[in-house]
Length: 158
Image (tube, one colour):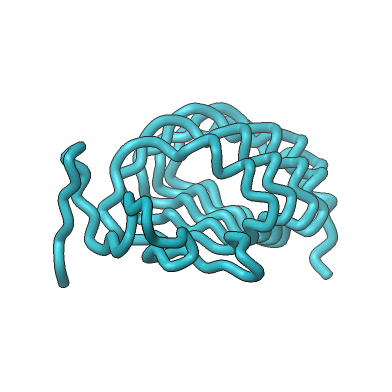
């Protein structure tokens, strides 16, 4: 296993082609594309540090976002609610703070949202009930308060 360190001091385990101006983004480690559009970012357990870029919300074909088990901090960008194709969002086991953005409720294709093992606080927003495809919601081991909103409890399990 090779450890990469860039000029910012970020130590990634795998970083093939990241930061290259001459290589197509679809050939970067952890990026999967179809028809030239990014549909999956898979960088779990890659020693990432920093914050989750709000620009990810601009990726109109992004279906899967796997950034679990890293050292990411800061809040979950509300702009992720703009990535209408998102189905799987795995951000568990990081150092994320703040609240769950209500904008994630706009993701009507969202099936699996895993935020456990962070420092997310507040209540679970009732707007998540608008994510009608949501079947898996994991928020344990956070600073979540209150009860599960009725809007989420009434989501169909079929």
